[in-house]
Length: 281
Image (tube, rainbow, N blue to C red; front, side):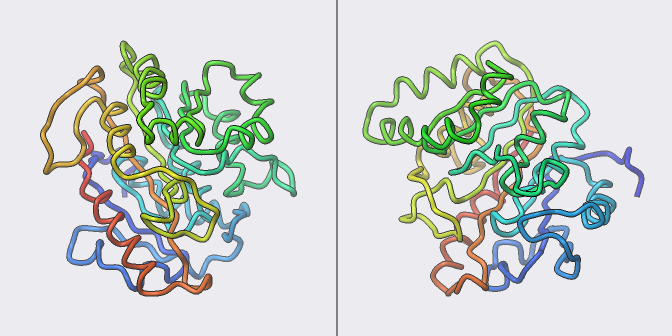
């Protein structure tokens, strides 16, 4: 397929590394492009070079546009592969209970689920801003202090503590931070969502989780996008009304090997269904 094919933001992809989606239904009966990567070695948590090239060859024709689902948080490094195909300046909005800016045990030569954002910041010239939403403040200091010092205002963080305050009624500081970042800034946005950012009251993943609730999550999406991304809701526009959304990826499934059960599958299926219906433009 030609790399220069017309790209559409309504593309939906399901990339299967394990059978985590087996009990879910959100992708059935729709227009999902499904790819089975379960037979590729060197993909669990770390991505070796041979596996990287094989996966890139398969996803490259579709580019970064659209919504991409790719299994548990063990495969969050896939975000680096998708954002690496963006050929224009952009803002990355990353929802995650972890910074994913660690230096891997095997060095930076090997891409991992815990280091992909560090790789993106260091390697992607078109990545102009990162908004990281969800990790505890202490984790940000421990794993990303060198990057926040090196890249300065290219990295904006909303730690877990600010999420908690906003959900307790003190939303002013969080909303003001979002407005400062997006008002008057016309760069397009790419969203990355690791569902471990959500409270366990909403769904379960195979990683330790944050406290983000659904209402605040969708409100942050609306402010970042400049419009209501949920098609069934009022299309009230905000400061970034002309903002273009390049794409979104979603990980954080509760995998079968972690003892997945019907309830966990149902929780994730419900959220995935909501995300799959978001309107990108």
